Image (cartoon, rainbow, N blue to C red):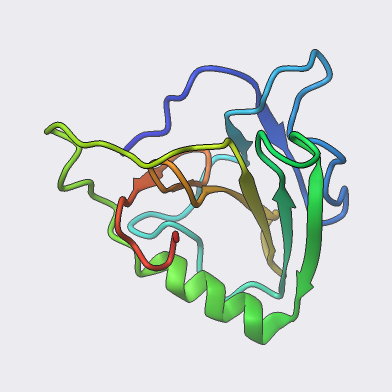
Length: 150
């Protein structure tokens, strides 16, 4: 489905690193990421495999609200494993035309930035609680029961 969430979006690359907060300079929570327009079709992430990935985890409404909780740099093998799993997620939403209920959402976020040798970085916005989703800024994947997003 198209990512049409209204609100501020974060532009992030592996070179810029993880911001200290997932709020914009005006204090609003970001709603997703921006990426260069995709030049690939049919998959969530481009191929070939990424060369690395940066993972930024942010607290939600608990502990230290909306601040960076941790960050991790993945090597090529681990980044490729993660990208392969993301690309296996269905691009359709079989339940989105009906009524569904989501568990509690504390607004915690994970951002994954994949680096590639031949193209710009691609950032992914992930919510693992509430209605679990991931978005590349163009496509959003909704998954209530996906083990990958839990």
